[in-house]
Image 1 (cartoon, rainbow, N blue to C red):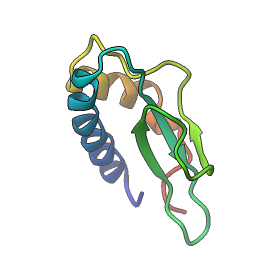
Image 2 (cartoon, rainbow, N blue to C red):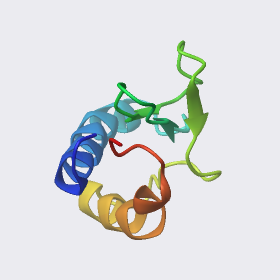
Image 3 (cartoon, rainbow, N blue to C red):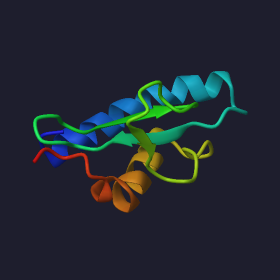
Image 4 (cartoon, one colour):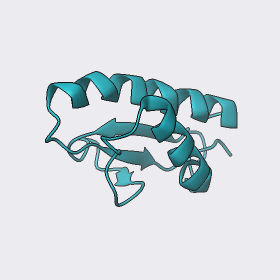
Length: 91
């Protein structure tokens, strides 16, 4: 990610994709994963129910995305407690 705004936009987009998937299967747990930035390679975040196929992605937080919260509530909670601590911004 190039900027904090890019990272926030990506999180919001991931949550917008998460919500309908969660509604289709409310027993499934979804987690936030991240890929660390490296020189010449931007970091990334993704929300999925299983470990991503790319094993460079690591679990960003131990708890799953909160099923009882809206997209916006999850966005603010994750942004304020987890997002800025992830090493995903460009060098």
